[in-house]
Length: 412
Figure 1: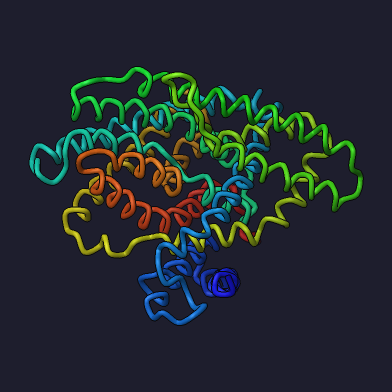
Figure 2: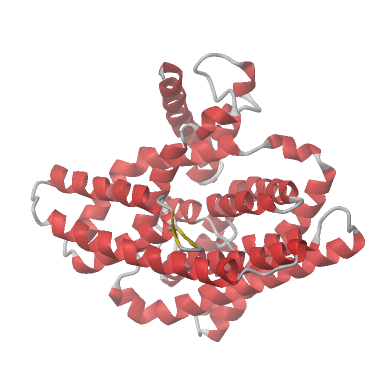
């Protein structure tokens, strides 16, 4: 336990110290935290096996998953607060159109690129794995995006649309992945399960929205019984943690397996709460200050989880390079086309796709599910490689895009 506490404290302090030189060279703090995690991980300082210095094994990093889950819950709760009715009336249709179309275009382009790769190198990647990777490509990391927006106080039509699209992306990605993974299983096993392909993912989205709506209503009701600043923050923290815990519950209804999406549940809780609580904006501002250390730990731990050993495999590097390039093309072209279709302004059309490049936790979760395929290990390694690249350069690209769009002021 004492070594665990030492690791947590060193991770937090190291992340903060690394953010100073990162600021000097114009890198977002998120990138500094991820680099800190890499340095403290099992493949750098952790390999030296000094007690309390770094994470010696992946098991030590995994032991702190509860911190990552809690941080992701607070991040999703914060993003949910962007779905205020006033903004939904202005941008709701645009967000839904862009959120769906850019994900579908990305999946199609990655599928096409990887299937073409399979034609030339059939032993490197199977068709089922190519289809599964295409669906995983649709997922975007909301955490890195939100941290960049917060750090640089970005604001404007592009930023507001971006936060909505990132939130919608989780639901769209879940449906695309479930359908693609079901098709991949059918190609390998010779049978299609309608429950797995259609019923279970839709049910997961519906159940997540319902659970989030209920917890949002109860949170608003609970806040009314407390008036001091400390008590109201404590209630908010308790409910986000409760929501994270409930979202991990799984059960079966006959042949149907039911579960929840942590991101969707917490986003819906934040959406309902911000639209019915008169003081939600003030509470969110205070909650953001409380959760800052948690967010730093989330990114440091994310960096520590990145497996550098995959860089030794040339096949993974080849497939990963095709995946990264085709996914970037899909996000940029898909966002540009869907923004033009929904009549967004020119700057949003030009820069939104770049801000959607970061990819992390949701994609890794999908890759873990895809490990059931015959070459599922290859899928996981490709996603690990892409996450390593996207998480290190994605926040900087997001910052540059928001700056070019005029939504980050120089003094920020």
